Image 1 (cartoon, helix red, strand yellow):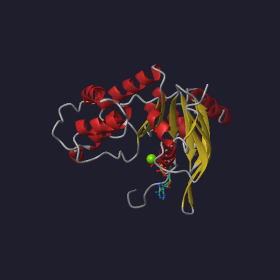
Image 2: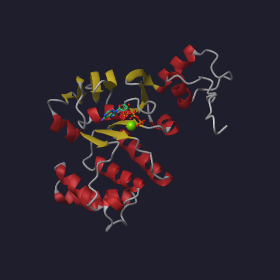
Image 3: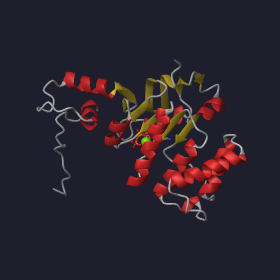
Image 4: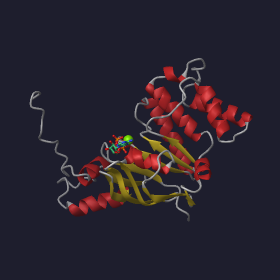
Length: 267
Ligand SMILES: Nc1ncnc2c1ncn2[C@@H]1O[C@H](COP(=O)(O)OP(=O)(O)OP(=O)(O)O)[C@@H](O)[C@H]1O
Ligand SMILES: [Mg+2]
């Protein structure tokens, strides 16, 4: 089966600084893939490269078997993305924006209009008919960006922090939408610091730290790896949570003790 995403030696430098170093990653079709890492690890830089928003310094990307460098348009037809900066057009209304995006993807006017109505309703934005996007709250903008990312029915959806800033109701709706897409055969690649949600949704997880891929596998594989390295575990034979696994892998204390340090003037 052709992988949904393959990267080979993927590297991005900014001047002297290497943000992403020699990342080799394979995401199988249908996987719900969580891409984790501390702040500044290289997650957004990787997503931007995978979706054609940023050119790699070196290495290659294949999306559904297509080389992203030589088939940029065909690749973009197959994917949807909510990038870190959202990149919406502030002077449009939500409906105008979705109409624009739908038509850009080649949907006919009737299909675009029907999906726009459905998406605005789904994201609880249907009442915002007059307001310009620039006047939307952060969470409203995020929901609109999510709506725009799926209007053409992408086979792979890339989401950079989709749950950041959205309310509990929208978060529940979003989770259901993503699980529905997975059930229908789509692939989802997301970054999130909300590890409880990642643990519940994602079947496969990769961890990047300072530009290097340091873990990659199913949740069970990562858990088994951490348990094998720390046979004492957390002492009471509990199943490790993703948060504990993450902290152990990126250098935190496996026993999840909070750091000892404190700010000198706040003690
Ligand atoms: N345009 C740029 N110019 C210079 N450095 C950059 C640029 N974009 C990103 N970086 C650097 O690359 C590193 C990785 O950034 P990136 O945004 O990919 O991190 P991240 O894993 O998404 O972090 P976060 O969890 O905080 O979103 C950081 O050190 C960042 O400062
Ligand atoms: Mg980021």
